[in-house]
Each structure stands twice: as structure tokens, then as C-alpha cells.
Image 1: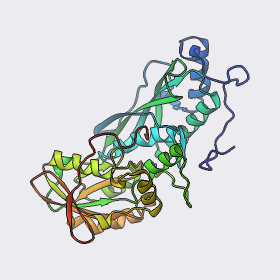
Image 2 (image 1 turned 120 degrees about the horizontal axis):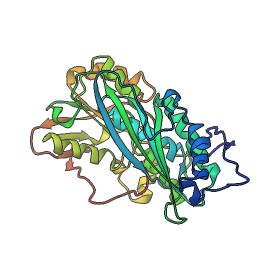
Image 3 (image 1 turned 30 degrees about the vertical axis):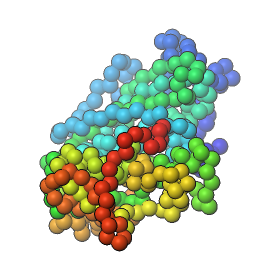
Image 4 (image 1 turned 180 degrees about the vertical axis):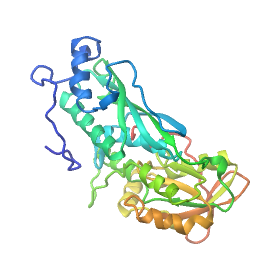
Length: 353
């Protein structure tokens, strides 16, 4: 059986479906059913090898270097969408947060909030997707937790993931490192994740299906570092999209940024979907895209490295850091007019990650 993204899933759920076709409150009650769920559902998928100790915590071996640590929660609706699902998103989202520090992701935890009545096969699909994503991202899911809430209180499944990675370089990849003159790159077209989720939610159909760009970004970032690129700052373009990410960096760095609207890569179907829904694609979330700030002297080499990677073939130089003050983001259009690109005051697209 395949999901809407044509990804093969093993739906041979290890929980006896004929006895427990859906999650029960007892699956979170600390007794036999909870232990069966943990043993057969999670341990069978997330085989941590020597890390599986049936204890309250995993004992990890960490290589030399500074540690990066992050946590995130995922409440996307619907659970499955073109190009991905909540399980894949939970793994890649946390891996990507680690990658934005230039860290090599190593270990993840996974906390599940399950709603009573969630079909057991749905949970198994999500778990299998997380396992596949962890293998692709080269991380181990080594510890976790499961809670069950009353029917109608949890919208199926919520997932929290925390991640640990190791920083093996001496770069300080943070807004404080941004310098006037830095080039700003994005590694591909924007807005697909948010529009993939919203198209399903709103029942929109286009000539070509809009699929989420969800992907692990650590490998492409580590390739830049390995090739000696001086990365000053990185930010994954998730909630709030490009506009929010750039404004956050400008404010923290106390620098102004000028972006060339014509250089921002956008697909026609994404632009059309945004127009129908009255949205600005620069505020729409992505799950496999990042902005990088780096010196002009490293630009050509960085482009060469990025475009050689599958996730960087459409890398575009969209602007640069222009001055120390004021900390604003400016957008220049095709006729040379300039306006301030500000953050949204509220949530444009709820429940997309």
C-alpha cells in the first residue's frame, strides 16, 4: 500500500490490530498495553542498538567538540500531505535546526501525544516514516515518551523531538557574525511546504501537484564547511518563511538587508496558490530551505558546492547585507522601487508544521 506521496510503507503493524485497531487510553496508562505499544511499535522501529537499555534515559557517547541541542514540536494538519507527513517532518525539522549551527546531528528523542481512537495503522505509518527519515539523515532515535489523551483532545497525534549534534569546526555561525557586504543565498524555490499543506486543507487542485520540500539539510551545510566556506549565519526558512528569518537576523545582527525580488526563486504553481489564498509567498513556510550569509570572497566557491548537491541545484543569490543601521529588510522590485519587508503581526498559516 502507498500513501499519497507514492512512498512505500510497511503497514504490517506489530500491534495485534484485530484486538486493538485504535489507540486506547490504556496505551498511555503505564500497564501491559503501554509496554506492548512501546516494545512492538517503537522499539521494533527505532532500533537504537546499544542505546536501547529499557531505562529512563539513553547513555550516549559524544565525540569531541561543542554540542548543539534543540527541541521542536509538530502539530501539522493533515498528518499526511503531498511530499511528506508529520513523522518525516518531526525528524527533518529537528535535524535542520541542528544543521543551522553547523552541527553534525547525532541523536534524537521522540515524544508522542496520541489521541484516543487514533488508528493503529496510522501510527505505524508515522513511525515507519520517522525511521526512514532518521536513516536518511544519519541520526539515531534513542529515547522517547508516549502519552494518550482523551478522544477529541489531541487531533490524532502530536510529536516532540529533541536533538543533539556535535560541532566539529571553529566557525561562529550566528547573527552576531553577520558583516556588511555579506552575500545572502537561498538553496532553492520557496513556499512549497506551506502551499502543499494548505492546498490539501483547502481542497485546491492545480495542473501540477505542489509537494512539500521537506528534506534534511545537514549534509549540504557540512559540505560547505568541509570546503572551507566561511559561513557567518544560517537560518532554515520554516514558520514565517524568508521574510521572518531575514527580519530576525537583521534585528539580532543590527544590520540592514537588501533583497532583490527578481532573484527569489518561486514556482508558478506556488505563486498561483498564494494569490488564490491571498498570501505572500515570502511569508510561507519551507522545510528544506535555508538562507546563508557569507563573505563575497567565498561566494563563487559556495555556489559551486551548493549546486553540486541535489538540495542546492537551484541556489540563488538573493541579496546582501548593506549597512550597520537601521536593522530592517528592504525588498527591491524589478523597476527599482524599494519597500520594507516586515514580519507578519500574526499567524498566516496555522498548523503547517
